[in-house]
Image (cartoon, rainbow, N blue to C red; front, side, top):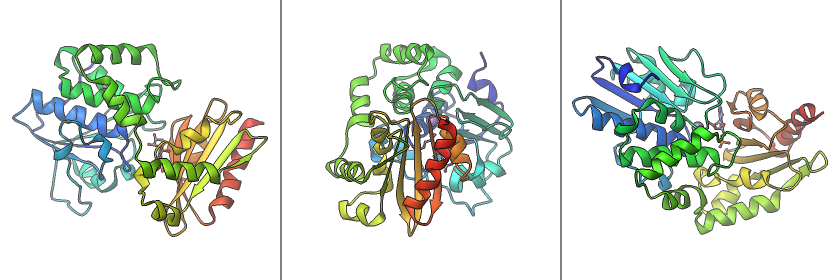
Length: 318
Ligand code: 5GP
Ligand code: MN
């Protein structure tokens, strides 16, 4: 088994980033690698850049060290740049500049189609999470509590608390190892997966009330506008979980959720129970993701956009 340390080489200045709209696996994997390298190689200059992270992840060690990248800063040259949970320079956001300018690049990811992105890559679209890949890349005896909490966080969020079909026995074994280290796993699960603010619950309620069903109820869709988000005082990061709640509606094979990011620009989240590959549908709109969880952006009337997405779902269901 190859280990991450073997790929550090003589790099003295290392940058770490994940995808825009950072989720638990992105934040967890970036902070796991950050904390691990700081503990093992304190002499190195290690910097971590992510777009603002949801506050539910701020308990993780190193979260306060996260910086915002400047896409115009071409003078900051890293010996090595590590992209986690992201296999596409444009999805790195402003940190894409640092990645492009780095002397050497590593990609650790589990999204479809992330190949050919870096000098060394560990890309496995079957893996439950990028955090599980990070777990495999670190010698077990080198995993501290701080690193374990980061890895566990990413596994919990990307597997829906070890429920989705991306959960393998290897995931459970890794999680068991992390539990034995003494992490506070019930608290992590509660904080990063189940707990919602009052306003988040209310906007989810509104999204469920707005929902419409298609294709003999095999597809369910909903929309939240900017006006509704303002009414409830919620931000894009508070929309997490809505598309999954739609999907567990009885008979639904696919759920589609759109929320408005700016005037008539909508972020689309897609989830599939089994039969439909939603990554293919998202790719048709310039997005991507996994077979059962994917996303993209659309412009214009949201319900008309849903009509065209539903047509693509129908093609796959037939
Ligand atoms: P979510 O719906 O939770 O935002 O994203 C589901 C999955 O699809 C995640 O793995 C996320 O990284 C990916 N994803 C979401 N939006 C996009 C997008 O616009 N482009 C690409 N390539 N992947 C996306
Ligand atoms: Mn992930």
